[in-house]
Image 1 (cartoon, rainbow, N blue to C red):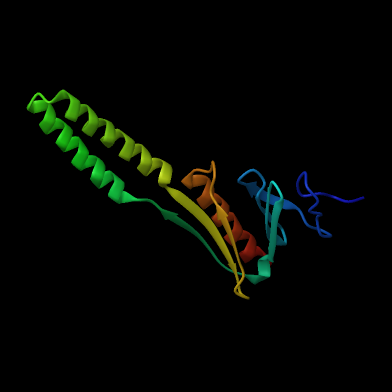
Image 2 (cartoon, rainbow, N blue to C red; image 1 turned 60 degrees about the vertical axis):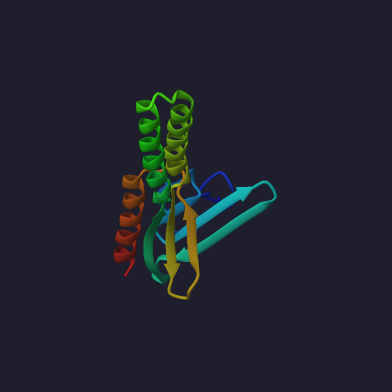
Length: 149
């Protein structure tokens, strides 16, 4: 009887068990490999790296801090306009400051990268996972690799 790793068609290898999954089962760690599966509309991406072949695990996070700088400038301008009793300009500047701060938070992106010794890599955008969950996943991958070697 077949054992499945998730609700799709990825089958367990003999003796394989799921250790951990994250990102809505897009990224799975088993006792033998790391698997990435993503299905969108008419496109499916599937990638598997055996634990023996994992060369590195990392998380890459990026943001646009310039948006916070621009928000600070807009805030200062809004306060100056308020002190000069220019309510319309102050409203526009303060509104722009709020939008720029929101833009900063919505533009932040993080990616988990698991690279193999052969040069292939699994690159998974982090969605709905906090920093602690991501680090826990990466530490668990490292522990599983150490246990296999």
